Length: 128
Image (cartoon, rainbow, N blue to C red; front, top):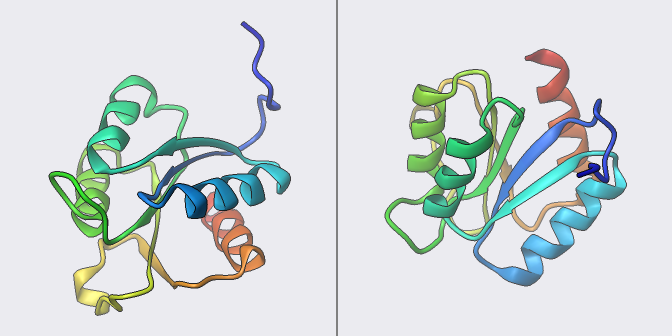
């Protein structure tokens, strides 16, 4: 099976429970040259990571979502289990204190500009 993305494309796991927000963010990231894996909640995201964590370079997650854990808990879990994955956390409702973020986590307030997301993810990929 041929991949529809360049082997050099950074892989981003996008975790967002709102389908339209997820679709728009995925489109923006793909247009910027990223390969995007999508998950609707933390449980799905963990299943994706169990299958292909070596490929994922950045987790981009919303904080508020249904399921067994929120985005902050997911980010902490990912940091412990897969420390090579950079973390970008977003919310329109909560502004976590730096102490609440995983050590390697960055925060972006919603609504966000797609250029800001792309810039932050490119910075995370370069710095890791």
